[in-house]
Image 1 (cartoon, rainbow, N blue to C red):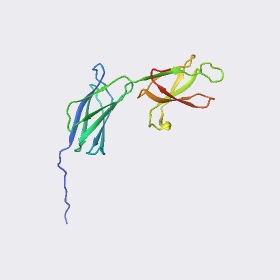
Image 2: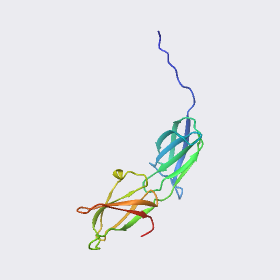
Image 3: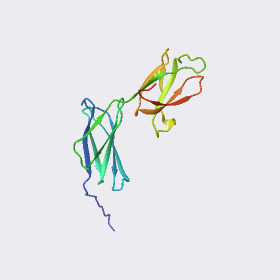
Image 4: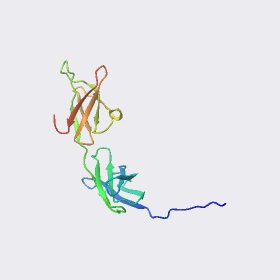
Amino acid sequence: TGLVLTADTTESLTIVGHVRDSSGRAVANASISAMGFVEGGRLMYRRFATSQFDGRFELTWLPEASFFVVRATADGFAPAELAVQAGEQNAQVTLGPAPIMQGVVIEAATKKPLPHFSVAAIQSGQPADRAVFREFNDPEGRFSLPAERRTCTLSFRAPDYVPESVEAQAGTP
């Protein structure tokens, strides 16, 4: 009895591209994912990468699929997606600026600004227990933070207060 070794020699596919901002500058350290779909739209495969200093990324060892959706995310930018064919060698993903959520936190009883509080922008479908809160210390109760989408839930916390959440849209009071 001997040991039999076999190797899969089928060629794997690679998607190569660049992530840039809306003015054409490279975006380094963007998180890239490729989701491979087969006919009928069923998700078949996922692969991850990070863009380099020049915005270049490479997603390797991808199997055959009908098409891939490449998604890029980076701090300070709204996420972007691009549908590409398997083996694409020049995928160009452009990230636009993230919507900014801003406002003023006031105490309900006194109508005075709350100077110390935390805020999280929770996106649709995101579990609330995974929200990332940012602390603010502003005598006027002001805050400003980026969000992935124009519409989200803003969740507020402050010492000695009951947490509150409101639906919000960037650019509206």
